[in-house]
Each structure stands twice: as structure tokens, then as C-alpha cells.
Length: 220
Image 1 (cartoon, one colour):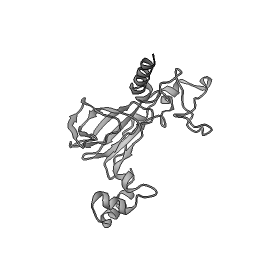
Image 2 (cartoon, helix red, strand yellow):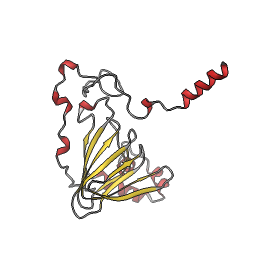
Image 3 (cartoon, one colour):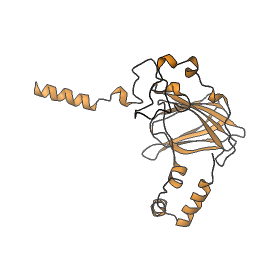
Image 4 (tube, helix red, strand yellow):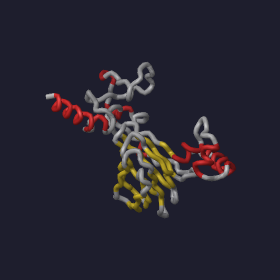
């Protein structure tokens, strides 16, 4: 019996639990988030009382508006996560609209809390991601084609067409987060010490300072 009990315990430990795969499963029909409530610390937001919930809490038109791509990277991400659409609270999903000027780039970044899938709505995008073994998987996609990026992996999208491009992306988290490599590494506050960056990239401090100056001036 002891051996059997130990075996069952090992199985329970190594098997993945569904709640570990994405956001925790909700325990109610909905939980419209109260974004300005700081009285509690939760993995999500406190729920608006059901008596105060209206139809408007479950609809969002933010992705209908084209983003402003007049910036150094030539792209704009319009987020439809829980911070913009509180009705998503605890539901484990969100969506973005990403607009690209010709030549625009959504720079290398990752989403630590979600897998991303997307469909190109218009234009021609070069989409790629890198594995933990530094293998690049990429392809040029046109309207109607879909892509997926596994959770946490560095990826990018670049408009390689002559016209504007746009994609709609979806995530299995109501707040997937984003770590944008250029700005994370070179514009963090407080800053990463120059000696760390110079050693990591094998370049002079003057180059690091130049990159910091350029990225620090970007508004996007």
C-alpha cells in the first residue's frame, strides 16, 4: 500500500494541472473588474457587484480604431486586455490590434503570461519567433493567414509590403504582459549598468549610450 500511495503522489506531482496552463479558471459566470480598487491584492481584479453590471461591460469597440504608426518603429498596438476591457477579468483571454506603416516593425518582444495567435487582416507581414535553443521560425504572411507564438518566446512582426498592414492577435491571458527587448534593456528605470550591457553585447560604452539616447527619445 505504501508503494502504491507513493506512486500516486508522484503522478499527482508530475502531471500538469489545467490551472497552471494559463489564467486560473473562473468560479463564476463573470467578474467584471474594478480596476481602481487597491484594497485587495489578487491575481486579477475584484469583481463589480452583479447588480451594477450592464450590457456595456461585455462589449468593447477599441479595436475598430486604426492606431497611430507615426513613430520610430512604425507600428501601433491597440490593446484589448483587462485594463482596457474590464469584462475580460478572470476569463483568460484578450486581443490586440496591431497596425503597421510600410516597413513598420513590432520589435522583438515576449509575452511572459500567454501564448499568442494571430491572423493577418491586410498587408504582408514577416512573422517570426525564436526558441530557447536560438532557432528561428519565420514566414511571410498575407491577409487571411494565421500564426502562433508559444508562451514566453521572443518574436517579431515586420511589414514587408508596400502598403499598410494590420493583424489581430489573441492571447490565453486577460493580461499577457509584454517584455519589449530594446526598451527593456536600454531604457529601464533604474537603468541596467553600462558595464553589464557592454560585456553582454561586446560593444563600447559609447555605443550603449547612443542606443539609450535614441530609444529614450522614442514615443510610441
